[in-house]
Length: 328
Image (tube, rainbow, N blue to C red; front, side, top):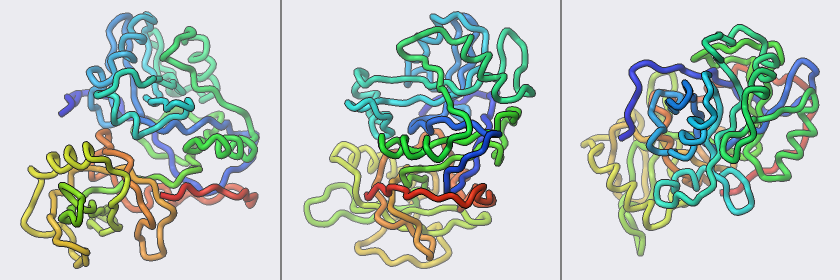
């Protein structure tokens, strides 16, 4: 279990919207497929941690090492990513880093909250990024996350062609609102990925070991709802390790109010573990269609996994482009 910091900075969070758009009041960045991470750097002392304050220092020592050598006095906001052989960020590879430290790791930094004890959070985003670009020296692991102006539709098309996760849209003049989910930052996904709480599992069938499928849920107005099951995306090692993690969480009865039919006997769990899944779409009944397991989200608590957290955002444009779906 990773250590949780007693005092930590909660990052600014984005709402979700469906379509890319063009607007000269906005900039657009790549949406990196990894772990959001705040880095508090004071010369050679580095505290790297998740959005919930879980320490990443032991998990990603190469990032800590490179940050310490940069001799900064700053608070950075960015994303820890692992790259596959094609140089594309892979959340699944990020899960495997502890067993294979040769996986290329990067820390893409996209915001600067403080430098030399000067608070920058009240400055407009573009000013903060100008400070950040000047601050970060060229490094093989710590990278500045660049942006483009206005041309969100064309940028989204390029990102989609490279099979990246999506883009971020951010208002140029937005201040940094710690711990707030705001419509001044928007995420636009190319791949349908999301999080769900593991509320149980079914017994294995045929040649499968340990368990058959994971039973998934999400909170809706404080009540846990069933959103489907996922039985693909696992290898033998993942099946074994997940089964071990689930054993201490078993409970006698379902945490759901509604009854759920399963194709084999179910074991129910205390809602604690959070899964990342790729899927084709959400059905009209609120179920995940064709989900595939990507890994555990150790940086999220179950209570954060709620139904449609960003759906209050209205579409900012009527322009559409065909979005590529990633089948599970």
